[in-house]
Length: 467
Image (cartoon, rainbow, N blue to C red; front, side, top):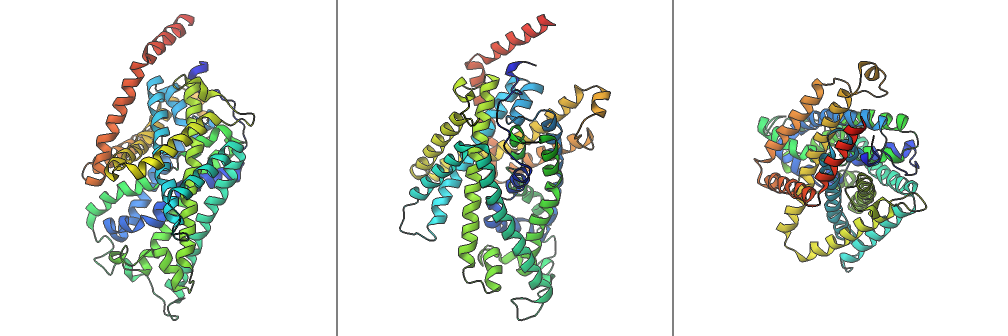
């Protein structure tokens, strides 16, 4: 293998198993569950739970495909480095920069949201101040050491997990024992009393798949942690294997409780289901508690964004697809240059979010939604190519093989393609299917503009001559 394959890194393996477990879980539980669930429920009704199960199964197999390759090549460049190695330099270049841009754009929105959430307690403070403070804090955490990032992410994820578990337990208490409802069990009749379980029909379930899949955005972050995991052969499989069950517990469990307690067609008009549930229990500060949880979820996203963007720029530099400046590590083995430059872009994003019209910002963020489908598809294709290069004897010795290969691979790709088609029928997501391909064309153009195609052709000829 060439030194430019992106599979040779010098990062410090400072992430412990508990860090990896919670990073994997935190990546699957975003702000959307607390804020965006009402919109998804309106689209599909109670049948949304079925959409989450279907989407969860697909995500589980995508993560298993990533796990098979990540255990063999545990590097922080993850899918970008794998695409570079197994699908070609252009694929690695496009995937790395697309994932970097996805996180930069996502974090622009998240740190701006921090300013909004802080106004709940400090309405007189300008939004840009807490947004800037959040950016500086998370940047500092990422520059200290990878263990600092892991520790913060562990506690951020734990706050979300505890909140959801309490909400599910309390909700079940209301459903079964009538806690907070004068001892009268609420039951689960709300799941079918307002137009039936599949009230919005098959069309509603299909349209909800777009929102369901986007709620899983960030779950692939566990692959980026591979380069700094202390024992990747043990920690990565352990984290990935539990993803599906955690999705069932946290997403399906929370949605089951919410739609059992409240009529699904009223959600979104009666306030946050999480706030309402805690208020029913007599918790007066419920709104403040949930606001704090959402604030930590936004900080968690910003924290993960700086982590992943720094590592992606570092690995792109190793591939020769980003300035060598990004390939230098600090004394603590942290890619500080990539983190600092990403933070500068986030700072620009905060300013732009106040200056440019909302429509323009929507167009830019739509690349993030397109990027998710691209990265997941690349993961599946990489695993297919990786397996094809192995002899039957090597395949038999794989430490963490993806089950169902290759049939499951093609099912996953067909599903992702189906979601992309569904996006074309919704005005809110159609823009992603327009801007996304334009972004890819831009990257291909820069690939040829900088002459990297000629460099790759030269390297290929040299390798053939050596053979």
